[in-house]
Length: 229
Image (cartoon, rainbow, N blue to C red; front, side, top):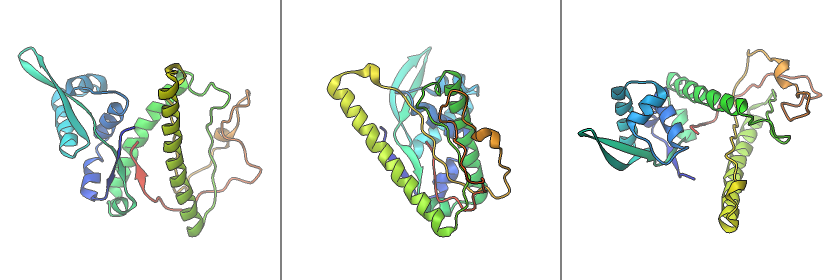
């Protein structure tokens, strides 16, 4: 797993607010390396635009240059992700709202594509796959408590992954490895309509948002940090 890079400087957060940079980092998280030319083809943008944003990510320390390849009289540069950027609570608190919304929008766009593609390929076909959603009402203390528990769960997730990789190295059973996706969110939802259809479990009984016996209520709280994952 690539190391986290905790970001406290809101200027760096603003630099990452561009949706293309979020997509570049997401792609390079899943492969060894790629060149601006390859990324430009994959994301359907011009090479000049892609090269600029890759250079900026490199200058910010999120990418590292690992290979130079001669190509028709030119040199093609290949980069890999050096660190997974994680915005600290302190940095997020100092970030202007317009930048926060740009970052979240870019991340959600990438996340939507990722989840929808996985679903179309049968990523939720397993009987133990989960897609759950709950609306809850929280006071300030409840919001903070839930935020802490979610942070602990993310740490536990990393520990479980580490144990899984250790078992694979020990047994050599690489065919048992499954690339899996986990999404965890906590956000305000005042005034956002609740759509009960999304809470129903499907006919096969998979965990697709079990309906609570309690009446759904809007979540009232405020975001407490964000991750670019």
